[in-house]
Structure formats: structure tokens, C-alpha cells
Image (cartoon, rainbow, N blue to C red; front, side, top):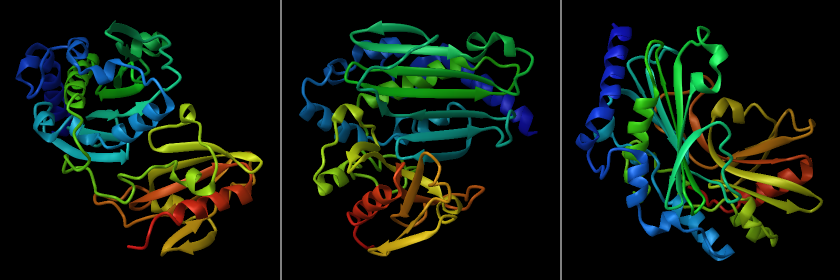
Length: 328
């Protein structure tokens, strides 16, 4: 029954390409057509470091799940699950949760301040916005007959350095790229309106939303070069090494397996049993668990992870970051 339903979902998705105008809020029927009509903000590169920092703040304020809302997902089929995987990404699953039996759409927001590397992706460009798509069998034709599912990756890369990657996986016997094109068209159309955090009922209100992962660099009195930054991560030099700070959602079991380090404002921090390797991380839990089903390693939690090769540096930056989050 699930397999039959999955096939029906895919048929609906493939049919979207022929009826794009029925999708709510879509001004055009292809991603490149949407690109031509997007506001100037998306077609203009930041002209200074201040504008680059402002762009990061502005994009972090966008609700990623709202880019393909439930009202649109319903046209792809009834989703079994919609979940936010990280503050910058969202996914929806249809038909079956079993690998290779159902259909999944996943999408995210990011930045590529030094430019996006396209590789083999086929692409079109208009007004500084590039749209690309890569079919699994075009990327790896030698895998035909060996795949357990089909997939297609699509991405919009904007002149302002923002990226919108999207992936669709479908059961064998289907072509995933028409559905990827339909989903990317919708996501780009919604992105032009910049839906605020909390727009989607599937986006949990966590302590990370609205926060700047580079705030700890300012607190420590060090510079964080804006060209090295990610949407929800910050990299900078500290003392005699480099550290990476990531605001993320992580499974409880993967965090608490490490050695307890300290408690700040009620937030517990843990070490990494692998820190003696070349690169390791420490983590602190910043808020209560996210709603939704547990992962294989327990519930998801809002977490700050600090990566580096020096144990003392990593712990010091983790402590300083955790201190920025008051008790709740």
C-alpha cells in the first residue's frame, strides 16, 4: 500500500511541471523565469563588509521551511513528515519513510561569499542569478542499475552570494528532476518575499533563532573575517589556532556521550571523546528539545558546537559562547 501511494505521490509531483501556474504565489513556471522577476537585492553583490554582515543577518531571519509551505507541499502529496534539520534547512517526506520507497524534498539556505563551485551541474543564468540542476545518472552514469532510489539536485545561486540548494529523491522507475524544478520554482518565489522566522508552523521557536554565531568573537575581542563566515557558523583565529563555532540542532545522544565539562546559566557543556584526534569538537546544550519524533540517538536539541585542534582553545570559546545565552 505504501509503495502504491508513493508512486501516486511521484505522479502528482511530475505533473506539477505541466501546471506550475496552479502553485500558489508562483509568478512564473520555471526557476529561471522566477529569477528574472526577483527584487534587486538578490541580483546585487554586497559592496562592503558592513553590507556582507547585514546580508548574513537578513538571510538568517528567513524561515527556511516557509519557502515550501504546507499549502504547496499538499500539491506534492500528503507529507508524512516535515521537519527542520538545522536552522538553515528543512525537509518533507511523502509516501513512505522507508529508504527508496518514498519521496523526499530537502532544501536549505546558505552563503557562498567566495563564489559557488558548479562542477558538472547544467545551468542557466539571468541578471546575476544562476540556476542549476544535476540528475543522478548524468553525474554518475556508471551507477545505472545499481541505485536504490533516484535523485536530482537543484540550486539557485544569487549575485548577493546567497545559495538555495534543493534535492529530491524518488523511488526507482521515476525521474526526479521535474519535481526538483517545480520545488525550486516555488522556493525561489517565496524567497523573494523573505518570510520571517516563525512563518511556518513546522519551524520550532528555539534559542538559536535571531542569534549571531559570530557574537562570541566580538565578546572575545577578536576579528571574524566576514568572507570566511557561514549562515549559522563562524570561523576565526583565537590564541594560536583557528576555531569554528556552529549553531545547530543535534541528537542528545551524540552530545552527552562526551565528558561533562561545565555548566553555565544552566546549560551543560560536554567534551568530545575524539578531541585528541587532529580535529575535534565540544558542545553545549542551549535550550529544551525540539518538538517532533526522536532521532535514533534521542531528541534533537539546540546546540553550539566549537571545533578546533587545541583542547584549551575549544573549551574557552565554548564557555564564552554559552555565557551569551541566559538561563531559561
